[in-house]
Length: 120
Image (cartoon, rainbow, N blue to C red; front, side):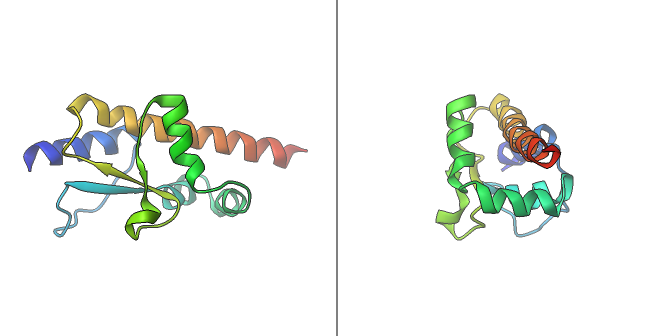
């Protein structure tokens, strides 16, 4: 469990995102709620635009295609549609900050598109 906890912390550093401790979180699998993350760091207008113009699976495709990171869409696991599921038991420690940075990079691409459309 210490290994999984360390990997969770590494992922959160890569995003970056502060979370409150949850005594029920086993740290074996986790969900990155992309909609929540965008709302917190970019704003509601961005989330509204994204949900109206981009399919939720686009996130996992962009992670795979652009960053060679394969994650599952959280919607298939009764999580929010705009989320990805991460296993903290299967990958090496050094991968989790890469996952966080890749999620941020995909988010930047969406934000850049959104802002470009707002300027028109």
